[in-house]
Amino acid sequence: MRRVLIGDFGMIARMGLRELLDEQGVEVVAETGGQGEIIARLSEVRPDVVLLDLDDPGFAPVAERISSTFPAVKVIACSSEEPFMRIFPPFHHGESYDSELSAALLALALKN
Amino acid sequence: MIEERPLRVWIDDRNPIFRLGLSACLEPPRFLVAGESAGFVPGPDLGRTDIVVFELDPPGLTTALRLNPSQENGVRLVAIAADPENDLLVEAVEAGVAGALLRAEATPQALLQCLRSVAAGNGSIPTAVLGRLLARPRSVGRPGGAGELTGRELDVLRLLSKGQNTRQIAEDLSYSEKTVKNIVHDVLVRMNCRNRAQAVAMATRRGFI
Image 1 (cartoon, each protein chain N blue to C red):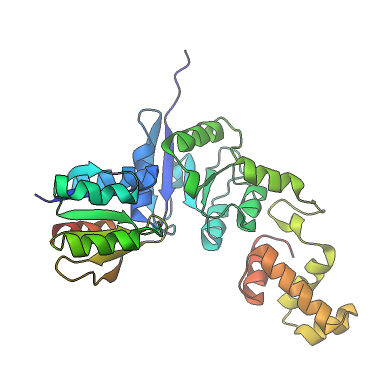
Image 2 (cartoon, helix red, strand yellow):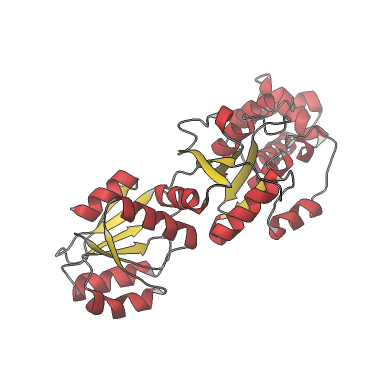
C-alpha cells in the first residue's frame, strides 16, 4: 500500500485529492500546511509519494530538496488550475517530466 | 420547518482535482451531484440539473449561456473565475450568470452559500466584482453584454460581418483607418475575443448585430 503525504493545497483541491486517494485505496499519512513543514515531516512519516501544489511557486525548491535528501520518495506536483502535473520519479536526481492530469493518470502515477 | 427540495448541481472544470473537490463539497440531501464535465464535455443533462457550476473561460461562458439561464425554471449558472480583474467575469454577470466565485478564494462554505443564494433566486457575486460592475458606465443595449459596446463599435462590427476590411470601413463611416483599427482593438478587448472573426461570430450569436 502506498503511503502519501499531501502538501499545502487550497481547501477544494485538497478535498478533491482526498476523494481521489480514497477511491484508489491510498493511505494519506500526513497533510501539511506550508512547504517548509513538509521536509520536517518527511523523516518522521516516511511516505512513498509526496504531493505538492504546482501552482505554488515555492514547490520547486521543495521538490529539489526531497529528491536530494530522500531519493526514494516520488514527488508529484499537481496544478489545481490547469489539468497538468509534473512528476519527479524516485532516484532520478530531481529530473522530472510533465504530464496531462486526469484522475486515471494521477492514480497510475501514485501506484507505479 | 419547510422541507427543502434537493438541488442538483452539475460541475464543469477541466482540472480533475478541483472538479472532484467541488463535487465533494456538495452535501446530500440538500445538494446532489447531477454530473461532471471538463470543458462541457459531456454537456449537462438539463432535465436533471438545477444549477451549473462552470469554469469561466471564453468558450465555457459561450456554452453556459446557450443553456438559457434567463428562462424561467431554466438552469441557473455559477461561474468560477481564475482572475477577478478579467472583464469576462463582468460580462458573465451582465449576461445572466447568477453566481460567481473566485477560484483562489473558493472554500466549501463559500460554494454552498453561493449555491443556496442562487437557488433562492438571488445573485451571489464577490464584492470585488460587484464594485467593478457598479462602477461601469452602462450604455443602451440588450442584456447579454452588448450594453458595453458603443454605437460606433456596433457599426464597425456590422461592417466587419459583411466582410469589409479596415479601409472599406473607414470609407463607409468617414473615419481614418487608424480610428477603425482602434475601435476594432477596443471591441476585441471588451468582448474578450482573439480576432475579428471571433468577435463577429460572438456578436452575431448574441444578437448584438
